[in-house]
Image (tube, rainbow, N blue to C red; front, side, top):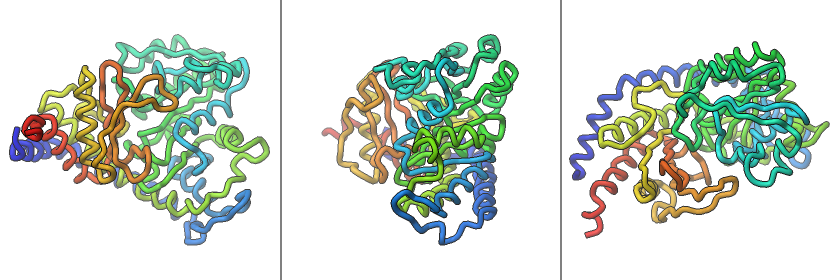
Length: 417
């Protein structure tokens, strides 16, 4: 397949996905208006960009950011901080803040993402984990290892279920990502079993992909990372937690300390970036989604095993390519790295990453380390040897990178001559 063939392939695929692009644009416009309304309601001004030092008392920007996120997500309260080191950190604060000794947490979508295993205590040293703190834990397996089993969920949850965990994105698995409509159904089941059950959603990779967020349909608390969707590709670090005021404040006291909660923490000149990134987020997410849709169509045409399909309803930004063998996964990541704006000259190699029990290969020459709203791909070195491709600050970059990936895969021998 020469360069002309590759160009023609992409142009033809682009025509095939036009209707999906139109749908994405409609969602973008809806979400952009929602975010704009939150800025207008809270009268955001230049004074909210200034910073304070020390304890961070009376930080106008921090208070305004919390209100903007809460209003955009239709939540009672939000805590948005550069002090969260990762999405996993936000999830851990929400879990430890709202679960007590002897209470029960149930993951309704099977095994959660790898980094959550040590937080929960199913792997590693249990002393610091939820299980080590006396929390009971169980998982409800997926139907056919692919989708939620609503019947089994209804049979399993009961009055002793204190919290359910819904991981919206697929993590390092090939299961179906969970839609907001499915989250709505699960929360109904949980509240019927126990009206006091806390419905907690790991919202990573899902923000602004659909018109509604989990907090619109019954989720009590959600959490995510600012170097994913809601940071718009420019926020340097941090995360957020949003939902019912009591649950958010309980989580805030795990980030800081009891008695301080959401009232402390200097933002250290990050307020403008966080506000601007959040304003940009619906548009940046739509660009990433268009790149994922085109990628899905291209991978389907060239014969890769890739999910979701180009015309599937999307609830996150991830496109998965299962290679079945280690070397094609390494080659794919190498090609993607070469077509990145930063450190394109490097070759990614598998390595141990904190929080994982398997070596990972990661590709993504991103402006912000670990940013996955920027075009990137990663995957564990274990069967099915899948690459999890996500992000793209603009659609044109994803399209150019796809050309480079196809050229690397189909013309590697010619390039070596």
